[in-house]
Image: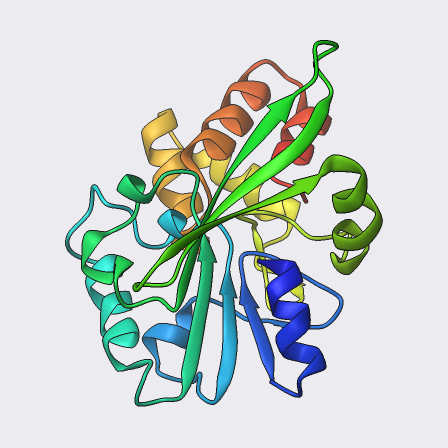
Length: 215
């Protein structure tokens, strides 16, 4: 997806990205999609099920789906990735311009030999195979290496300070309430990250807990 986005960038398109950070795109908050503040661009969304989970039909999914129904009128080409298509809200799968699934081919020594990408654009599906060496040489340098996947970081700044997280932890009687409060700060942060943070704070390991949230 990043390589395809770079091709579009080189062709003169404005590139925006959600939940990821590259050296040629503007990283934006998913909330800009709900507020219809995105138009005339190529939009890259990594792990799209993070904002359009197939298991949810209301709330953020419903609000977000309106954008995808209108993206053609707003001149937005959407390119996104998912580990499995079935993890993505079915209402928007056919609305995105390109959906990319990927799998790794592993060497006997457990290192990555190559990546096989399955690219679906609504009309056809094609497979693209890239060696791990070529991915490292040509694609990895396109990423901003400070990128944070599913972050407590959006649009170039931290949403909350670590002190805020500690305060929420001290005031939360249960893990469930802690998770709920953190997700109010960012509804797109993964449950595993928040749960791990809580467990590490309970175990009096704040440094590890902080790293889990990429703060």
